[in-house]
Length: 348
Image 1 (cartoon, rainbow, N blue to C red):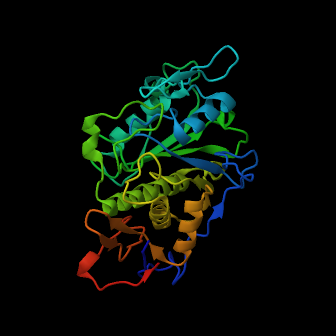
Image 2: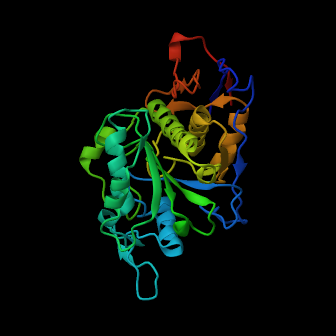
Image 3: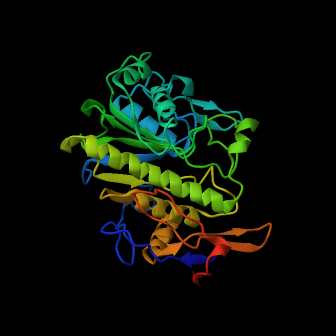
């Protein structure tokens, strides 16, 4: 696998002259175990980054489902998992016959809230939108518990009916924070589609969704960069408006679009590397914890060496490196220079 190196452009006091700008930590995990979304003793005011689905629910399968179950069972969020008389989540078979948690996504209040914010955010792309008090109330109007959400901020990248690459930061009222009052909330994001799939238990993908798939691996990784930048921009926008006790100081980030949604022509390390560069582009001081995995560790080491992801297109046998990234608070974007610029060094 071939990667490209980068020379950062001048960005004043924001960026260091060389070497990684983000100093990340890896979330604690017992040997052989996954790191938890939320800890009993967080290192600061905390939010977990949840890779979600364009239907914008918290729940279903994969990591989104694990976070949803934790919030419902351990923090009393009125989500849409069905439970038995013992309080355990019921199991059902999905359309493929796989046993999955019983989850009725149409009842999820997060979906209603995120859709309301997205409707405002897509009117003015790359400008954060905030949920009104009425939108929060209406999202929970069918729930037996309603006073859950303190604030919700959303950001959209495209004027479109689907929220791919959008991000949403929701903070919880203190009584609904899992384990510790410093676990302020979650950052929900929708990674780009590299293939038309859904996680187990989240329904069957339809053909209309196919037109949102990024088949070009370079464009797919660029969209991973976009969603990571949006995650950070949501956090930083929230922090500028919030009181000190409600500012998010730490986010914990898994690989986004590195599983079910991942383009088959890239690997998880390439996805994680694009993610890290996107986080850098939007970061103004929020601490980053990474969910530990082999791919994330490898990507972080490459990032620390100023390495960019490159893609390999199996149909053409041509290596397509990202030659330059423009990382600035004003642009919130990157630039793929390609053949129009001089070749760059590569590191195997």
